[in-house]
Amino acid sequence: MGEARLYCDGASKGNPGEAGCAFVIEAEGLSVECFFPIGVATNNVAEYLALLLGLEECLRRGFRRVRAFSDSELLVKQLRGEYGVRSPVLKRLHGEVLALASAFELFSLEHVRREENALTDELANRAVRIQRRVKSFLDISSLG
Image (cartoon, rainbow, N blue to C red):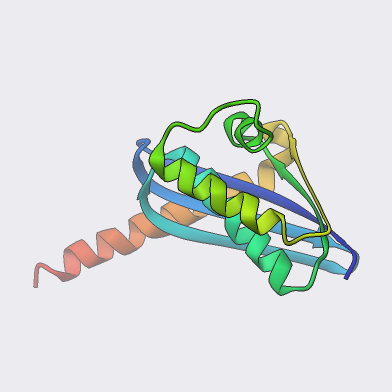
């Protein structure tokens, strides 16, 4: 397949708190939108998971070249080697992203403004809202 554009974002309400992540893949004749509630996590973990899950889907769909976009300066600069990675959880996710990215013929990651990533931001926040609704339902259900 040709080249995919991968937009990714994560959200956490509380940081750490209820979190979600999302990605959008765009390519000629294709647009895929995915979002996932991910439990309690930091925003940075949610950002990494969004990229990781998006890359996995690009690979599954047979893309060989991926241009990824994120509004997380930390994510982009850590993966470019401009910032160090101190958190043990982020170190693991960082390594997983780099390993997966190496499976592509071409991989690039660019920082974009939040406005340029509005759809994935909305999807990540939708994942958090869904998680809250499910948690609320389960809390009520356990009472009786």
